[in-house]
Amino acid sequence: MDASRVALVTAGMSGLGTAICRRLERDGFRVALSYSPRQRDPQAWLAMQRDEGHRFSAYRADARDYADTEWMVQKVLAEHGRLDVLVNNIGVVCDRSLTKMSADEWHTVLRTNLDSLFNMSKQAIDPMMERRWGRIINISSITAQSGAFGQCNYAAAMAGMHGFTKSLALEVARFGITVNTVSPGYLRSKITDQIPPDVMANTILPAIPLGRLGEPAEVAALVGYLSSDLAGFVTGANIAINGGQHTC
Image (cartoon, rainbow, N blue to C red; front, side):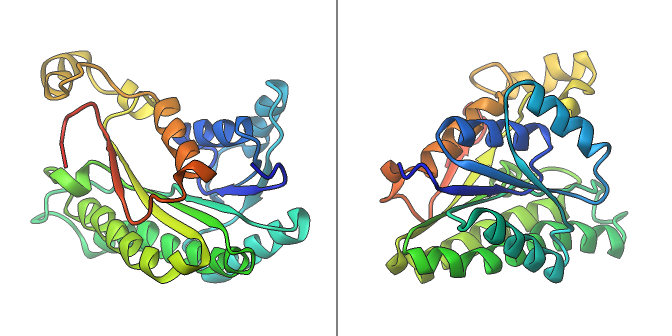
């Protein structure tokens, strides 16, 4: 691999984002990441990464805002000279049954999850096309495939993400750019750590044929593969990584 390649991971300070940043760095990329203006104590996160030997470039940007994403990608290009891989890792939930869901809860989820996808991909395409090589990896969810009670907004946004993936993959294939979706199931995280043990043991784990939660590092390894030269013939795909909970 070209040792100078640069990867940009949105929501890079999340649990999965951290695992992806570390994996891509391990694979030889120079890694940049974005974090939300609402991120708690980003300097503490960066300090912890430095203490563990990781060197990431971090940019405070609201990926829902087109001007913010334009500024950030231009900053990445100015500081690193190129952009080769984009991992769209932003996702929010506002769970509620449709009968109780407000218009704001609907629009917040769609705007955050889909507008950020458009904004970031739009900014990344030109530098990738110039080099005639690139990777865009969109992190979706098992919910897009299986549905989930109380997640009409989230399921619609995540399913829309893969429609975006398939269409963009067709548009940019001739430039050596691949576009793929990764759809994780339940992962070990701060969110799943808050699930009551009886719900985890009696409801969630029995629904997963492998009988356990996924690890962020496992998803990050898949992202690493899709970012590599070896994955050059994979595009427009939606790859499930959910322990068999939902098969495509």
